[in-house]
Length: 130
Image (cartoon, rainbow, N blue to C red; front, side, top):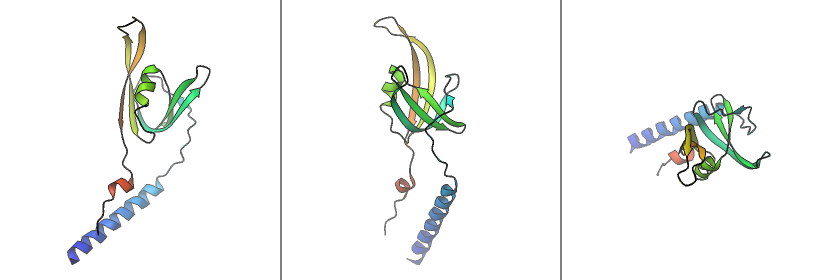
């Protein structure tokens, strides 16, 4: 029992230390973006906001926090459909997949590959039973 308590105390100290380090890395989230995605390279980061009815075209706008700053991705029918399945707070990666032809009407459209994964929070990782 002593070894169990010692091991538990060790893990609690590690968790407290990790939380302390994480709290030092906090950055203020600002949904305003100075970078608009140019589709040349994939954009990857944390989806921090979804805006609807933006601009003259009443479009959707997805704000992704990347290592280089916030990036705005303008919506389209394809992107809006895919982003509707993703929660804010998830990690996302968007790649331009070229122009495709709609087999029903022959029109060209921009296609995208969109990937996502949920980000674990510290509360999700703690599973301590006493």
